Image (tube, rainbow, N blue to C red; front, top):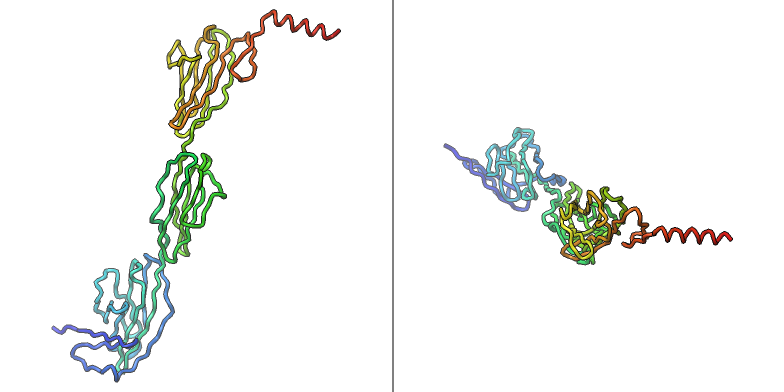
Length: 338
């Protein structure tokens, strides 16, 4: 059985292919025609077709990637399963490379040996790679006033441009055109979702980081509540805190627990309700809502008062006008008329 053996000699860009058993022309006696094709740009993952024209009286053909033979005639020399022969005839010699990667980038040569002299056609393949974010800061939980650094690194070809922006809530003033976003002395209003974008001529890759800012509680001013005896009364307390605050209710210096004297306490997120289902005279008075998390505490006072009391704002104090006081007010108005 006759095994064809091919020998490739690279001298400049001249290539001689010699098959065992055939007469050999020395390198000094050969003449060559060399052609350089325009560069071919292809995206990673696409399929590449390499083709060169044959012409008459062709005795040997080969496609080479740098110094490695891919195909010599119909014989496949490459072990890469992605490489295959498409067409080989007197007019065309075409091979296919599937799922192109960066390792496929470089110079390819089509070598044709005619009865008179060798002829080569070379082309440079440029592989473009879409951007991919490969290193991104993890979701962060920080305390208010901390200095924060967000990092985003990406690969791609051409080299991708990287930028940061505050995505939710949207804030165009907080952005960066580099791999790093610095946020000094962060406030609670900078908490949210931040987006890193890596882009080149091929595509765009985006990923997000969630930034949580812890801060001590603040509590809304309590609204005093007037309720008739025997009716249902509700005191409400609202807090703003991260992490979420715990609520405690007090009557004077005594803490109130759920179910205490028929009182119900219901906490739901940032709100707490203290409910009296049957208000009695003993229930009237000053109540304090205390909100607590690991960073601090805050409180507000709320007064539950009856129909005979007139509130002086929401300061936690009330003034009760008796019938005698009312009579004095009427007399004073009458005296002012004279």
